[in-house]
Length: 78
Image (cartoon, rainbow, N blue to C red):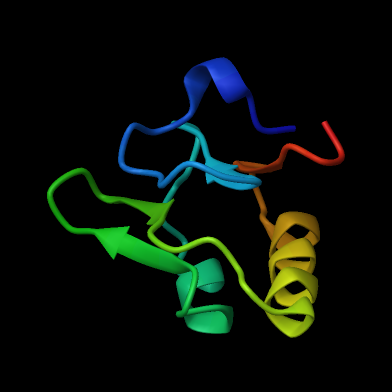
């Protein structure tokens, strides 16, 4: 489970975040590019935009479940 205290500073404030355990597998920015973006300099992905629609929230919840290292956090389920 993602650790809020270890959240990447590049994340925008809000419900979803990525912590430093991200291995940059590329799944979340591929599945939800409106929310997740790769940061080339640090070699990790971060939340660049919080979801605005129910569909985007659902896609983010799927990304949380699918993350191979559980690096995506959801403040509403933590």
